[in-house]
Image 1 (spheres, rainbow, N blue to C red):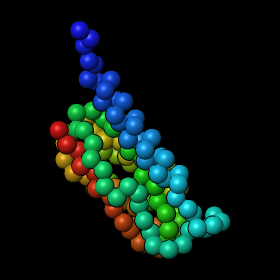
Image 2 (cartoon, rainbow, N blue to C red):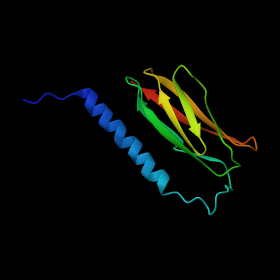
Image 3 (cartoon, rainbow, N blue to C red):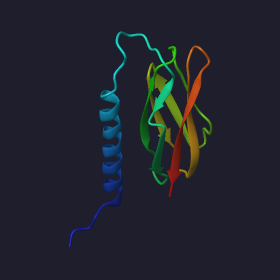
Length: 118
């Protein structure tokens, strides 16, 4: 009987989630040109991930007034590194709820919820 490697399954599932986010983000319309307009938005607005291993989640910004700033509420649960309209949240191997906050040059802000569950 074949033995299942649980870590390989977890990594595969995480990869599928990240690829899914990239596919959805790639389908969004920029509204034309390089300038953003409209309400500031973050995508995805919420995500649930496993807390047993470190996981990367890609967030995208739209609307508002660039440049954008990315931040997290609880650095003990994870960190965020942003470049322009894209940021990567890297979770710590810990459970809890964190918030990725996006703010723009006009001082508008929105947040996405990251639930890190066991």
